[in-house]
Length: 611
Image 1 (tube, rainbow, N blue to C red):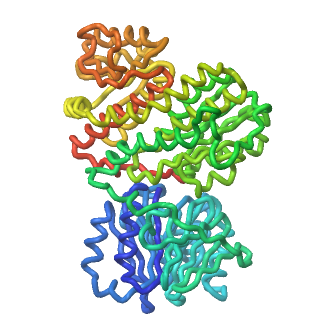
Image 2 (image 1 turned 45 degrees about the vertical axis):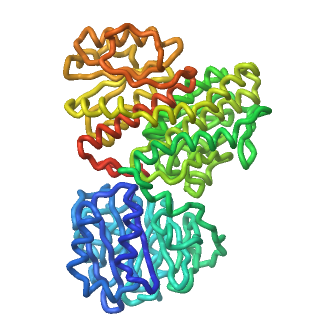
Image 3 (image 1 turned 180 degrees about the horizontal axis):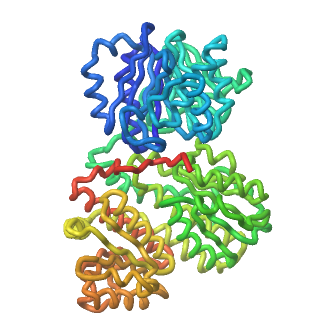
């Protein structure tokens, strides 16, 4: 959600900022802007919509941008106020000397805005961010320098923020400060960067500093000082970037989403190699420090796609571990009373590690004494600091907004973790454990088999483009697949797809079914297969076109399904990971056939950092 970058050095700052923002597009946005400090004045350029619109604005002001070597930039995902030029960042003070960009939400902005308006400050946007501009400007008029003004102002702010701040009268620096929103400093040769995420500086620098909450950085061309909010210097660890610039290249694929779908077999192989062995399941580089004997129940909290991964785990783990597993959306958990206790293993799943609702839920559970386990694709993220134990997904940076490879990595991680816990508890037999490990080991080759022939998914996608509504159904462990499949389709194609537990179809949703409402049924092997066939018969009797995702050579009646998307034969427990490949391909090819912006669907953000 949103992205920011700052630069100070010798290069053409406008192009440097635009390059960085381009690499942050995956986060989702609806407006963009940059501000340049050229010693004479602050120049601000903003545009609604995609970065191409900002490029055009800047191209018409080449004389103004060529002399600047200090600047900040931003792509905005609207929260307070519509996507307009006025609400786009950067925001200026009334005297046009102070400018900033902001990620996050200022929760007490209305109270501060009312106070500042009474003092004569004029607001030009509906954003919460503009409050911070005027507040810092107010403090600057009575402080010795920009650093002191920022410290004094941010102590009055409630909520989440990552700021890059410049002042016309101090053109040799950019101030960066964070609270509950990610921010890094990129260390270059005679130049330095500030960014909300590593892709903005990939290929530019090799070394970075991660700012923690309550830290402020004074970034100059040849130096970086980090302080706490009392002005005390902090000695920060310098880290090497672990990503190759290739991760933000499409590598010949039409879209990042298709590239990332095709990366999934390699990710599963990596997980198998790291965690499965003939002897025992290996937790990873760091040992599992959880006290398993204390665990009497498990709560898994997540949002969106990660919530569907949690539902998958619930089905497996209750069977394997024989203890209650509770799954809930983080946005619901944090606003109700719950019985989380020191006997709870509390698992927070977040692809980005910055999901605000999930972080809040983890904090609440930690206060109640629960053991905290974190699954995230970003080991450098905010949520990690609250974990007693962290499982990094290691799926690599996911550029497309719609989660694909990170979801599959979550499923595989939850699978091997469940086996690890079962092995420790001896809650399943050694023979069953060996079979389940083998099922996961065989997955990559089976995934590649699906990916090598996507013709059926492509052909079906062409047919789906003529429909405005679809229904997905599943049972048991496959309900999560139905929910995720429907989410993927609606996210990137904008077709209204809704998923239901198949047994609930006759309790209301069946009223929707006719020849204009296709039904996509996820039929995995196992105890629910026969019942799913019955549910499909019910849909067929209402003239709905019925599409099946099921294993090859399944025992099905001829003519029941209008189209089938097959997976290789597999076990009930691993079928969802194969079905998911077909559902991802179907969503991708449908959206592409409709001409959608597959990697950057409207209204969505990669990292939802606000509640």
